[in-house]
Image (tube, rainbow, N blue to C red):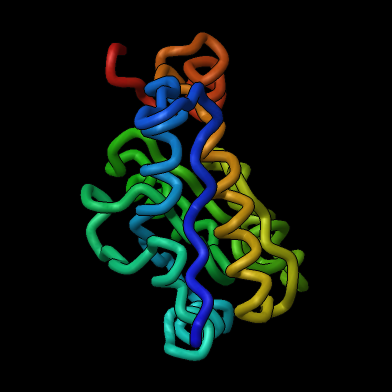
Length: 184
């Protein structure tokens, strides 16, 4: 028999026949287990992501069943591989087109820090143009490492406030990157 484990319920008050929690915790749990990935793969890390999506590693069991190739229908951007400086505006535009809330995972050494390509034409980490939530190390990282990065992002999403994009800290972060906010 296979073991089925359920997601832990958010903290709350429970009694005979009822359970109460905050809206933040309930929505966070739902968001964390229904992330829609947008793969932005330019190099070998993309091949490892393909393995992660396959039946052996099965990213779908973490709620990322549907990879989206439209930024307007995705909320988790996975940047995998070397990003040339000419590609940087395209990546930034893809990030801007994603709806809030949106999260970014930098997969591999090239996306995180430019990798072995310390040249004038390679972006030395995508955090120079967009904010990054989780870094996955490796060259290329194994599928297990990508799964670990997704699980770490799920922890971030579960504990995030519903008012994240309205906080002064988040607006200041986007302003630092020169990314327009909804209100201005």
